[in-house]
Length: 218
Image (cartoon, rainbow, N blue to C red; front, side):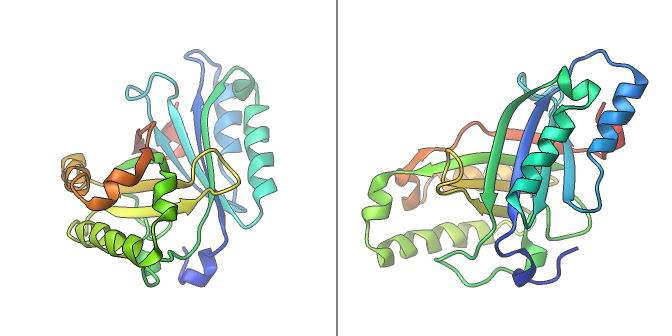
């Protein structure tokens, strides 16, 4: 597990949503699950079965080199089961320090910040309006500090933010870990009342998933 901010700064992350076929052999399953396990990559897996109509598996993985993430996804999709599967979404980004707040302790990060996974993961792409970036920095910082103050009220909800500028369709990837979806919804509803909300252009699709060990995905 990561011990400092320096260890994760500049790391590339991907969230990959996969729809597998409903019928497969035991050998196909073993080959596919084996492709998800690697000591070279930090990886966590989630089930969206019964939640999403476009995918039943969500994979999060992380590496210092972006091309290795791409090659790994390609290898997963070249397995016997992967060939008959499809990818509905891939969100790619980079972990970096926020320009609005001080460094966050690594243990406060979702997914990568603790050894015990929370039950649910909620992840979505995020795009702000052009007006946001044309607003002077101090005003933006003031609005973001309000946003952060609300988030700090919900200590049991952990967040991971990745920057996608220039490398993917969205500007950010926002991911939350929680054991209680109602508490998470309380957080989202309160954040809707902050000033920064009016500068949101897009924050869908919202993908809710359940933490599942690889061997239990299928």
